Image (cartoon, rainbow, N blue to C red; front, side, top):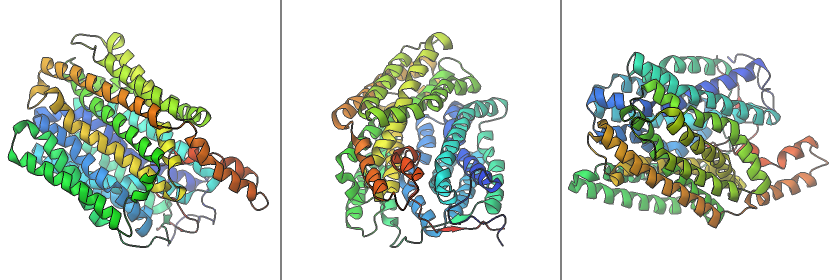
Length: 521
């Protein structure tokens, strides 16, 4: 039996009690993944000490999760469309939390890595579901506000994560950061079953692209293994590198031949879509290197506690919350080319300032200026690049386009965490030595700054200033032709589709009307 009022044909009101419950469920459910993403990096030194892990073990602790998440996230969105977005969202929560418990109980770094790989599968099921539920459940006129609230509250979770995680690591153990998910997940499952309507896409047909997902995972896994283990010079490294390359080539061939591909290759026929994803890959690779090494450097070389290391990056989160929407609006007004050029160049400047941080330096005079410049640059990139990706793709591929862009970003971070220590000569237990990690961090910031700057130059050379404006023209024309049929207030929304779509990510496909079912009791 259903509980609560049924959603009418147009959806649930955000201001209604049920609407608030749906928002709370999606925010807290997403927070489970957000918290994990922000606190595990803070815990790396403690994990290394407790489990005796070398640098490769720490790299796999991060990349085990990113590997399965990047490879399976588009499949997760497709499963929600077919079998019910709430159902797959809840399955993702349960899966993610069970894997979190395994992480907390891990007796060795090998078990921890295996649990993180399993956790990434749960993340791939969970992450696309939250926004898909919002778009399916709420009235069209309430969706933008609901997405805005989801984004803002998710930002709060991201900001609180490093502080809370740092406290738990210092007061209890790194294992506590994984146990934190258990009560949150229990609440989400309870509230979701009572208050969130089920929805699915009744028009979905064809088979799931399991072969494409498997080849993507094998390809990313092989190359990641080769990069992380390259320092040992084992023949297995060359074998896995070859397996990875062949699997990725097989993925492209399989997607080209598949009648129902996970990634329709025709989407890359748009030069702007391809260019925006290249910019995403280069810039996010630079970001992945910074976020992996910065908290380790602060704790090992500068002697920060886990709480202080987590708090050190709070200005970045604050600037993202303050400036991201303004950067998106600026891109709508003047085009994305300038923001996507200036943003990465500012990120590069912040990294060069990080390179000047020395052992014994204070936070205010050395660390804070670097993270502020870095944060301003990052805020200038996130919304414009997402809007550009979506504007450059055919509207029927909007969900796939955002999912591809998110997968590209995750893959870039995966590659950076795998390759950067090799490039700067950091291996084994060197991360435990203050001088060694300081030297490697300084070299890494030079590499990541070069990558970020290359991303800015690539954007200047390839991104058109009118890409967002061109994407809006069909909506304006359609709105004008339908004035007699559609209330005038809807035209104001149709003229700026990117403001709503830019908040979508992780492959959550467009929601079709008439596919909402009541919540189960």
